[in-house]
Image (cartoon, rainbow, N blue to C red; front, side, top):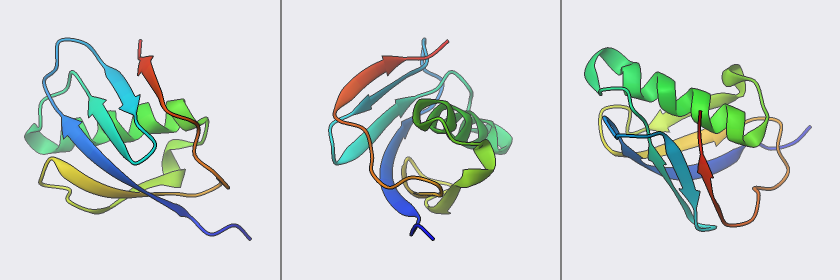
Length: 89
């Protein structure tokens, strides 16, 4: 069984467009949803799941749910992709 990967994420809620930038160490995530009532966290989980091609249930916020810097855990991966910038729909 694979050990879940941990990922440091810097969230940017209420962005004009959704995108991700991965530098190999920290994922910068811009989401259009506001931080109110966990909407930005849900948008963040959906964006990361889409980027990594895993189900949303495989992505969990371990720490930082109420802050901009978060620690996430992702099941079902053995390695993270190389550095890139991704525009989301």
